[in-house]
Length: 56
Picture 1 (cartoon, rainbow, N blue to C red):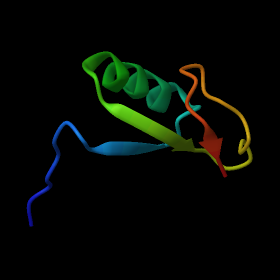
Picture 2 (cartoon, one colour):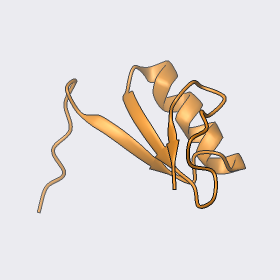
Picture 3 (cartoon, rainbow, N blue to C red):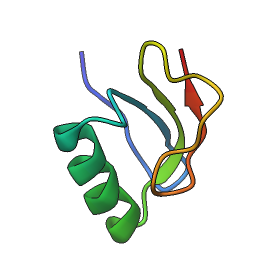
Picture 4 (cartoon, rainbow, N blue to C red):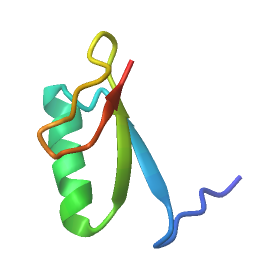
């Protein structure tokens, strides 16, 4: 099974508020990836340091 990714692909990041998730989100946004949301338990309703909405 192939993973198909193109310029229209939207991404949800698990653990976006953690150290690794935040780092990789920065890298993806810098590269031009459309990061539309993040998920971290207990932190729903916030925005990440990148302005991405966070859900539980």
